Length: 385
Ligand code: GDP
Ligand code: ZN
Image (cartoon, rainbow, N blue to C red):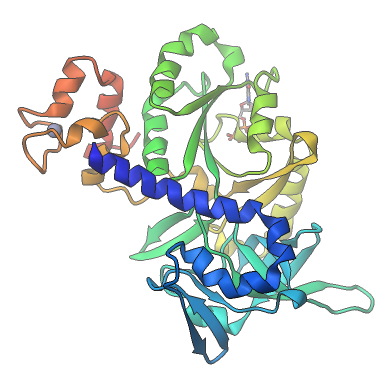
């Protein structure tokens, strides 16, 4: 139990810190100069351990662990923005006034990049120096000078290297359908494992409830609700549950995942009818550069009360079940199994064939849902859904 608590707290602290900073835009902009000096301390969250270091391209502030490395910038000359998409060397950055700039990246940032820390990724909060080219056919361009610390990182390991898909993701909507295609709880469990691994909050959405009797879903919904997962029932067809989903997206960056045909596009169009048009326009425009299909794209979505949210979409995210999860880790990502794991007699217990096994005892005694345990066995064995 102690182990579990520590793990959770670490995850929360990370997300919580960055959220506080992000929502604190007015203060940030007001005290820009002062804050620049304090930036290293604030960001590392480790007190006065930060130090300054000079690289060829300029000065940077770095924390003791070398985790937060932020270049010092001239905030008067820069704008805050959000990276909608990275394509090769060019990032599309949306400024706070919603104008979109095509940005290159300052050389210094490239020097700071490591395998683990890509220079710029979709979802990044950045400071950039705008350069308006003027004249006819004015283009908005700029140079990214600084990337803020990240949370909610969706990444995938490809040939031993970590590949960032999207960052600053607030939540993952796991979209399933009640029927056509039939509900697959095992698949929900797979997506949940991946969410637990990334630490990003999952929301389970069961769409197409117009095709079934909603009461039939309640036993399943109950199992997930008891574990603390949020479950939303919806029907893109009848409009049921669309209002609450829209509210859930407001002010957040949300990744949609789920097998094809469950109604992700239909839900998004029901939430914001203008979105489909924008998605199509962008994918038509980017047909030429199709080599970067794994990078994500953020689409602004209009939600209630004029507050926007962002939907993160990529074919990669849609199939993200079980990215980089190894069998030994799986039990730790099952909230219902986790409390029993430390009570098993064998330290390397796989909770499959061992006897005795605290997890298996808990299943036998009805503390763990038997179907969830079946999911665990399948995922642990590496079976495909
Ligand atoms: P995606 O592949 O997840 O984006 O799924 P789509 O949005 O393309 O939807 C797949 C099919 O399911 C389409 O034929 C939709 O019309 C249908 N569909 C989507 N939502 C609903 C719903 O709530 N009820 C019913 N009955 N059909 C739906
Ligand atoms: Zn065990």
